[in-house]
Image (cartoon, rainbow, N blue to C red; front, side, top):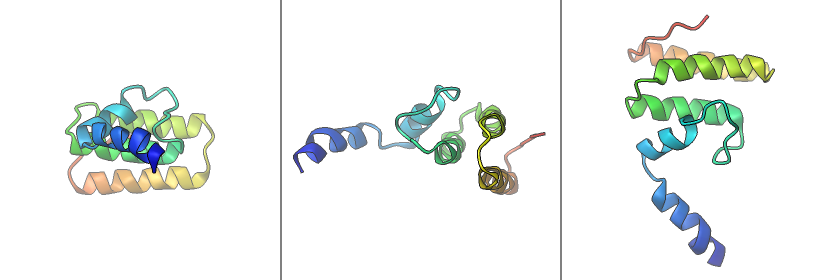
Length: 99
């Protein structure tokens, strides 16, 4: 409980908004992220946060993260999850041109 109060609670109180999630997950998309150790979830959550935050770089982030999935030779289910996310974003009006 001491560690939760000392470390976790301040972290979550500081980073408890979509703006902060977008910033934390997407400011350095080339780098691994200590805030999210699973890359696939980091990419997906980062894109969702960018979309909700109306980040003008959302489409570029989608392309970048899609390319990282291939470059890092991540499992096929990672590619499928990204495909699902982009199809959902397409349905809600996000322009996406991934090749």
